[in-house]
Length: 409
Ligand SMILES: NC(=O)c1ccc[n+]([C@@H]2O[C@H](COP(=O)([O-])OP(=O)(O)OC[C@H]3O[C@@H](n4cnc5c(N)ncnc54)[C@H](OP(=O)(O)O)[C@@H]3O)[C@@H](O)[C@H]2O)c1
Image (spheres, helix red, strand yellow):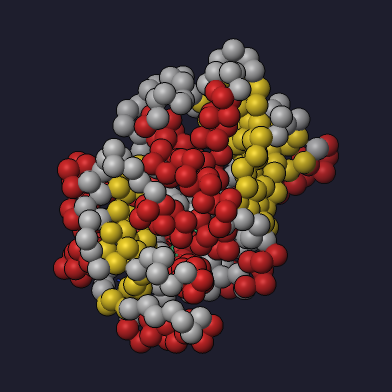
């Protein structure tokens, strides 16, 4: 593909977009010829101020700017035609994302993003999957904390289990062992938009609650879901619902169906957040569970939603400070049981806060992998991080993103 740019970052002005822009600029400052990058957004003045800031920090880096409104199919097509890969941080994607995915699918441009909105991905699959297959565009949603650790962790577990001669893991339980970090206004806006969408269109509940909603087919295997604080036989601790489980599980399930040689037919997967052992663990799991319920119920009702948005939650453009990002981390463990009863556990660990510091590294590495790591025999369509980028993404994350996968036992 001979195009003007290798990567265009659409949404470089968003909270997570600015962090991602800095990641790319830092990489280019070390290796100015490594890739051809441009930033895009709807506001030229905001983009110019980001470029000015980056120029002060990385004087040898020059990044062109492209103006485009996400709601304009014309603008998005012009951008998609100029680059090999688009990476988007314009969200909520369900509100602003359609035209860009359409333009990429139609023009054979690879695409990745940070959406965690099942209803958006479901709509994109229905509208553009065949178009992407025909054009050769590889579309990869969920390239941040949701859902790379879950998806890559499960892929890593399956690979290591089979290399060790244990066979395929049929039961997989992902547990968040620890994490520290905050939310941005954009993430809150996306969560609130999901709740509002369901209120407006109750039929969307089917998409949100169906573990196979993003799969090529519903295999009919009953999946379990951790919906409240409960005692966890897998870890012998208390476990609570994990807020990202609904999207992560759907992505892992899609990987399982796109990689039938690696995942068994009756594959089962669930996620939860560990509270700890004993009465302290029980209290902590109940608190997490109650916190999630409060946000979901609060977001569903107009007066409490207004109170949360006005006084409690960050606004669009706001999020954790650089110091909070640096001080953050996450540890996710994935426990598997094979068809023959063998057990294996792996761990995915990130060295910065999950949602922004680590997510911006995951997203930028996913974009670079799309630009430079695909083989000639990889075809277009809607992929998942693990099913398209697999081992190469794991290597990139370890080398450049402070994200380590290892076998625990
Ligand atoms: N998966 C993960 O782990 C993860 C982590 C972090 C964030 N996210 C997701 O990433 C998205 C961004 O989050 P954020 O906090 O960075 O959001 P944000 O700060 O609120 O930024 C929203 C961005 O969208 C742009 N935008 C809105 N309407 C547009 C339009 N019509 N044309 C062009 N650009 C438009 C805004 O441009 P202006 O600056 O010009 O207003 C801004 O750049 C959210 O959907 C969030 O859920 C996911």
